[in-house]
Each structure stands twice: as C-alpha cells, then as structure tokens.
Image (cartoon, rainbow, N blue to C red; front, side, top):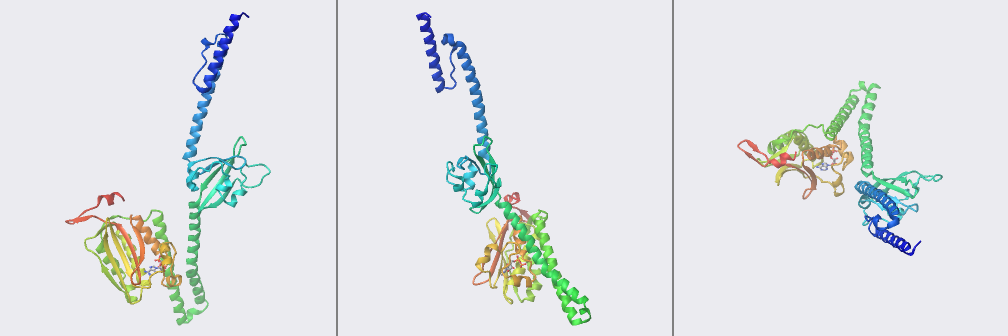
Length: 414
Ligand code: ADP
C-alpha cells in the first residue's frame, strides 16, 4: 500500500473512532458514511444496529414507565425483593399503608415488616422449601395478606400486601351478630318450651300455676316479637329498604305526638314527661322515623331513669340543624360505656335491660335512622345526674304564610 493510501485509511479509521466516541455521549448521533471513506459500509451497518438498539431502548423505556405507573397507581403495597430478601423496589402505597417515612429500599423485608408469620412464607416458591405462598399478618393494627410471587428470572420475589382489615372486621361483626341474636332468642324460646311442657304435663289443671306459666309465655312472646321487629328494622335500614319520606315537618307537632304516645309507660313509673319546644322549628325529615326515634329515647328515659322522676323533651336551633334532646334525672351512664352505647346489643346493665323487655337494639336503630336522614346522634351526662340523648337533623330555613321556604342546600344534599 502506498504511503498516501495508508494515510487516507488511517484518517478514515480515526474519523470512525471519533464519531463512535461521540455516539457514547449522544445516542442520537450517527456516523457519517461520507466521511469515513472505505469504512462507509461498516458505518452504515453500525448506524442500522444503533437505530435498532435505540428502538428497543425506547420500547423498553416506555414499558418501564407503564410498569412504574401501574406500580405507583396500585392501592396495595408492593415490594420487590432480591434473593436475600432485601427490598429493591417499592411503591407509594407501601410507604403510606405501612406508615414509613421513606421508601424502604436496601432494607431487609423482615425489618420493615416485623411479623413472625412472614418468616414462614416461601418467597420464591422454592422447591424443597416448605411454607405457603401467602400468609396473613398483623401489623400496627392492620391485618394484611402477604402474597409472594417468584420473579421469572429467579432474581428474587415480589411481595404484594392486601389490606384485609375491613373484611376481617366485617366477618367478626357478622359472627358476633349471629351469636348475639342466638343468645337473645335462647331464653324466651327456652321459657316458652319449658312452660308449654309443664302445662301439658298437668299444670293446666292447676289454675294458679297455669296462670303464672301463661303470663310468662305472654311476656316472652312480647320479647320475641320486639326482637323480631327490631331485627327487621335494622335489616331494612341497612339494605336501604326502609322507605323514608323526607319533607319539612313541624318539630313541635311531632314532639307533642311522641310524648302523648308515652303516656302509659310514663304513668306506670310515675314519671313526669315535660315538653320544652319552640313552635316555629321545622326539620327536613321523615315524620314516621322521627316518631320512632323520639319514642325510643323517651321509652329508655322512662325505663332507665328514676321512678317518680322527670323526663324532658327539648328542641333547640343549632345553626343549619334542629337539635332534639331527651333528658332524664336517673342514675346516668358510666363514662366507660359512652363510646359503645349506640352499638347493636350493647347494654349497660344487661339484667335490667332484659328485665325491662329491652332488645339492646333500640339505640342502634336510632343512630341508623338519624344518619340516614343526614343527621347525627350523641350522648352526654346530665347535671347533676341523669342522661341526655341528643340528635340533630337538617333544619328548614323558614316558613312563609303557610308555604315552606326550604333551605335549598339542605334539600339538595338529600
Ligand atoms: P334496650 O333495648 O336494652 O333498651 P337500647 O339500645 O335502647 O337497648 O339501649 C342500650 C342500653 O343503654 C340499655 O340497655 C341501657 O342499659 C342503656 N340506656 C339507654 N338509655 C338510657 C338512659 N336514659 N339511662 C340509663 N341507661 C340507658
């Protein structure tokens, strides 16, 4: 080769090298075939390979972005682990649900989730290693279902945590409910059966005994029918089948009606029921539901208040709401019971409530009904002693010449 030809060759090679170096810094650059003489063919091939590579990389990048969006958008915490169980990737939900201050990258999963059940998990579905691929664990008041999946290339595993706290709570509520209903049914049914048997065994002929047994049957049948009625109400309200006709109703009128209905139980216990209501108050509610709520609260105040005492039904204006208060001067309720009073079957004094024919469902029905009408309920001790059960329902702004000018906002909200 002549010296000139070798000089050209070396110049082309240098240009090729220089262009190749620049490509490392700028992936969009290509080698100019016209500048590299004899290497033009090689340059074109390299350019093609680069184009293909760039296409593959952009596809991978957009796939990565999609995966990242899916991962971050997931409500469940997701952790990717290496074979040593060190966290290599996590999503936003992991930080939020687990209450972490930072993504737990680089930390061992057992330190981030300190639950003994996790140690039983067969993370990579390894053959020969026993253990389930999912375990349930308790962590900081949460119940989590941890589900492990092996990464396909064998480089570790992915752990997904499902928050099943709500599901477990509902299951427990259902179990408790069934247990409570069975418990409530047992006594009256047992009394009915025993008394009927005693009557059949000959007590029918002894008038005095027979009367007592039949009276007990009558009492227990009453208890059963109240229980069935309350249970039906609860299930109708919860299924959204308790039909409410929400309209402007006169508060004073409804209060008077409910107090009148309480005349008999009140006189039996020599309780004075007083009304302290304003005549110009209107609420947006279902009159039948208000009556059920007020008679329930008045009945409790008469039953659990002081025999010979007094009960007051009062109404007040409370901003955009009407407030109803039922106050008695009985013994009141100990502080430790306040937060649970409106739970189904919760009783402060079990024996007394059953003795009074109570089902333990009254206050939970009251709460359901009030909340269905957009209101709220509560309890506070009365001074110097006794109880105040209160509820607030949306008010109607004003009444004009018999026509109701309603608070549009309150109506719209329903
Ligand atoms: P019950 O059918 O037993 O009356 P409720 O749900 O109406 O059920 O009431 C729950 C419990 O709250 C009652 O068993 C009773 O112990 C207590 N309670 C309700 N109202 C009063 C009151 N005014 N004073 C004292 N205790 C009350």
